[in-house]
Length: 162
Image (cartoon, rainbow, N blue to C red):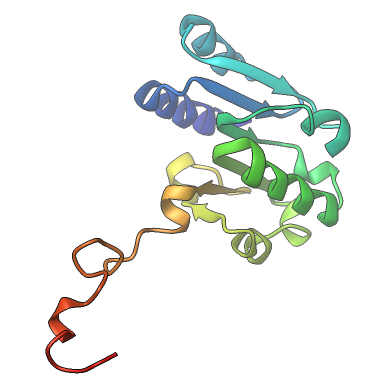
């Protein structure tokens, strides 16, 4: 994991202070490990991905899930299954790193199809990797008309019969 991303992730963890954090990556970066060691409020679970049944199925729900340097070892079908399962069952907020080599198998069209949005590359200073994020807050904002005041449309009561 690149140091720019590591710093951005540490800053976000400091500001939002999640209770649980899942990292799916070959190793834990030293700076992130030091930060999490100094914050006893955050529970870290590190998983090296083997298969969905072995690595992911027994896990519970986490406030933050980061998938880094993992998708380039997987087929596109397994990558999509992994991201879907994490998004639907295990993550309140999901960050996914797609390296330059992997972007042909799992690129922006696949990520957008799964409801992820691209996080700007300038934010992390990386040119070879793309970062995607999924959060329910951004995926489906509440429509303006969906509120108690406009629910029954009282302006139309005297004008027409339903």
